[in-house]
Length: 69
Image (cartoon, rainbow, N blue to C red; front, side, top):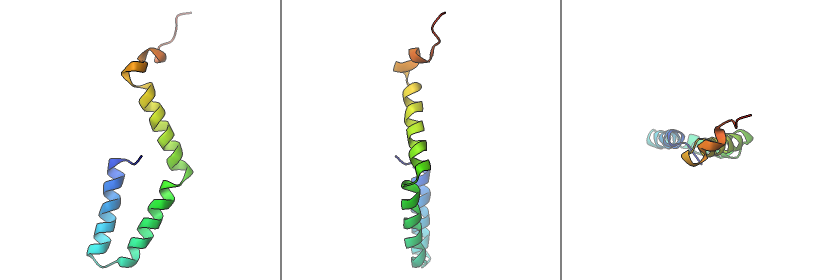
């Protein structure tokens, strides 16, 4: 799952490299994007985002409340 901004920025770098003749950089950008997508940090952030979405969804609002003692 990629952030919208990250996808657009990645496409912009590829487009600019192609547009200005930096064809050698295209391969580097693609490799870097693959390394980021396969990183442990990316996986951790993705899982954290999913958990946050579940816990803040309206259907699960009752799970966030502290039960009376």
